[in-house]
Image 1 (cartoon, one colour):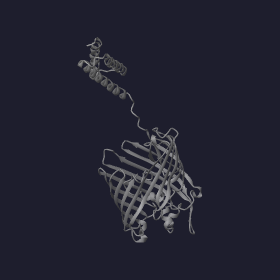
Image 2: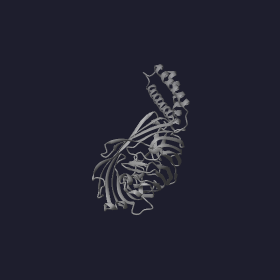
Image 3: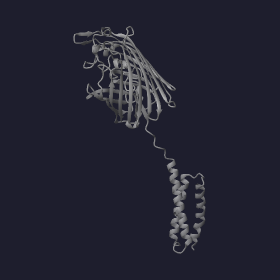
Image 4: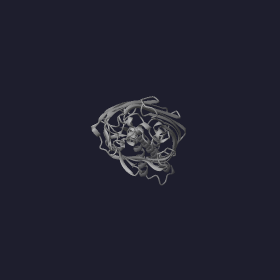
Length: 440
């Protein structure tokens, strides 16, 4: 056996001890392991050059041992180097605002157009005289397009594809531009939103249709804020949970009965809207108001006068993630001409000059088990606080099933009492709705 081979044996034993210490948990640095790898590689090379492998079993065993140790050193090096590579940071999330409701944003959206939407189809059945037909219909077919130009600028266009008498007409819902000087991915700041957007009054107008468990908004909001969208400039300051806002606002909503098929901004009536939202623990709520005038309105030979249009809202919600229920309440008072009453029946003369009114509702949503909800609702709308027999009230009960994150079914029934229907000989009626919703 050559002297060169015998000189490799002590070195191999010392190296084995070093590797064993490393495997036993002794801290070994990357440079140390690299040096040892060089030593082992050199010893393997020397052993191959020595010419003793052909006639020595001991030399072959030593070669195997050195090769195994080199593999272990390299495995240790790989583990150490991978442990020092920082994990890939998750994209930042942020938000924009549509009225008082946040639009969730992701940093990966920058420079891209992202798309969302939903569609709702339903069957309604009612004993209401002159009410909706007992039939299947498209309730909403919504396509939302958002473009995040950079971390400070967002454009949004939302199309309703189920408008019109037979739900076959397209209509623009959202058409807004939002700019936030310190970026959408910072926790708070100031934002400027210009264009057509949710009217920022109360909570229910901005509360998204595909998210709500109850199928429709309150009677008073359907009357005065048709289509939920108005036009103006809003300045928000704060974050998604606590913020204030204000700005100039067109007098009438886009789908107001007195504005449909008429130019926007009749009589150039522009007012002021503003409010504040807060969150404290499991409670959230807000106050809001609109001050403007309703333009005069001519239908046939009748001209209705310019009247004061003012609203004050307060709302409160209790929601505990550990609880099985959510309670939402909202109250409103104001002065306006009721466009639903006057546009459909001009002979309600006392409404033509405007009335003072109040409205409120409460909703109790109970999580029965995963994906199953029961809903109890009450609402009241007194169309004229100075009059009699003109209030409408509603009790509602419903069941909602979330089959999966995209598909929802709901069955609801309403018991309605409406004092203004005395002339029809029917003040009470029921309305049942079966709805299927797909969200994407």
